Length: 267
View 1: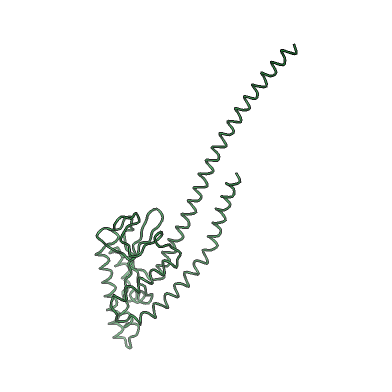
View 2 (view 1 turned 180 degrees about the vertical axis):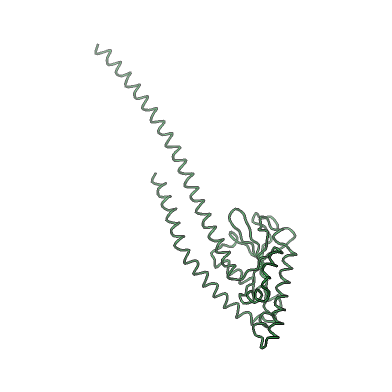
């Protein structure tokens, strides 16, 4: 039983460590969000007016930082620029979403980064209300164009075991908030088109949940392994007891034969 006791003790100690570190993990994610927000604001100016050839890779870089910074492992818990499903088969239609986030039980979230920086920067730096309103309208048109694109591509219909929506990641927190402020119904409009718009803060929460679910899954699998090994040990113990009973019966029979033989000589 010592090995089983050690395994059970280790399982619960690991569980306590995971619980104790959860607070630290949340703190780390908050720090990461602050860092990404600062980088996004700085890069927004640098990328102003640039084409998608430079803005796209920047958004993908922020996406990678969030995924890796949350403790997920590339190739195991997520895949970037994915052309294949979790089982290795090709994604239908030749589509290539920016990221697939894998969950236990073979569930998948499709994430695509959509950068709307140029109009937002004009909006943030506008000198008067009219320029600000016009820039905000242009910003909303950009965001709505991305929503329509994702709705048309419908990545989630081509990726195996995907949720019935695709995550549209806006890598700049300010750009996200401006769009939500410009059209309070924008989020629900996108959701009705099976597109969920998220900011860096929201995505950090999603991948943090994914990380915790993988941790729980690992602990559950360890518990199942312990239960299985305990069952095997109990089966062996049961067989051993039966063998001891047989030995006892045989000893009793041998003792009786011995007594009978000795009685014959004594009489």
